[in-house]
Length: 338
Ligand SMILES: [Zn+2]
Ligand SMILES: [Zn+2]
Image (cartoon, rainbow, N blue to C red; front, side):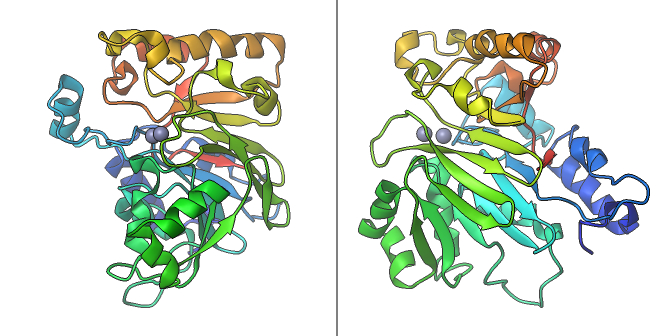
């Protein structure tokens, strides 16, 4: 039951994919499943692809302990979203890499179970092949704990991180236990450096200015044989980027960018300079110019939305305006062929 033969997908798998999309509360899940269908006569091998397995800020959605309107509504109609994360799936070798290990990693591991042959009964000690970590804020690495002795108990799972992030994990419990027990094998990668995963597939760590309490922060430029994708879940305003965010966008076809807050209205008691994230309203003004200047400008989706963000409300005027301007928000189940 490999995903690479999509046109011949057994009905039950197609149904389970649809159920997965529904379970994620995502109406846009089939976007690039369609794009992946090969032309008649072409080989049916699917290229490497990225699947969105989480789309919201560290506290989840409904946000933990939140009784606001959007969170209440999401709880009532079961439209949960998970903390921002991507899976890179390599159909030929059946390898899976996660970008960040979130507190929702249990559900997120299940969301990629269709990507490889079923494993024997019992706990799969190698459910994925590696994890790239962006930084040490709680939404982005707490899920690592599930790979430890008490849960999955992986054997030398590859964890790619900057030297500062790796040192943080080595030097602080409970993460140090994962290293000592060899549940994980840390691979230090400097910001700006590239890891080759297999022929034609690589990941570059993109330095991202962001609060540095514990570690530095990176985003990821994921290159496949045909296309490239940029993932920047957490950053300060784009003005602080050097090289500029546009220099990175030039290299990709799709970008999933920090969309934590839509506008300053969500944080009435905080000055704009103190918010520490680019506001979606400003990002659209900035990136709209790219599309006007070049027909090859990347497709831009916003991700890592906070529960206060009106883009999470299905019928909000903000979401309608964003889509009119040619942008999207990321949703669980979306896929992008590389
Ligand atoms: Zn975050
Ligand atoms: Zn953060």
